[in-house]
Image (cartoon, rainbow, N blue to C red; front, side, top):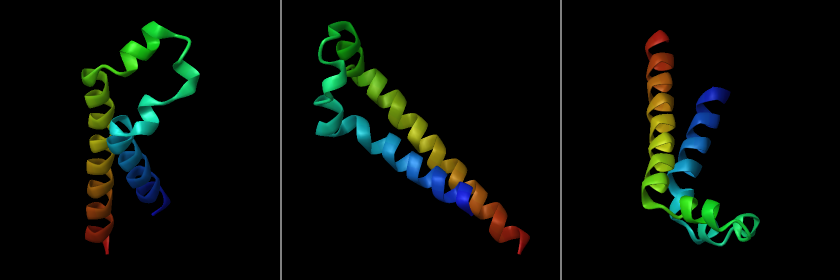
Length: 70
């Protein structure tokens, strides 16, 4: 059950985080213009969100398997 919880949490964070102001205002990457430009790329943001969706699907599959066993 802990793995389901962690997968859901990671999935939600990865799905939502690239589209928030927190992602854009990260001060760690401010001096690195090339890295910042890469992180602001919509394709990279979409890829990160896609990984989040994969985590959510895996969590749902794991819950389905847990319910089928009982």
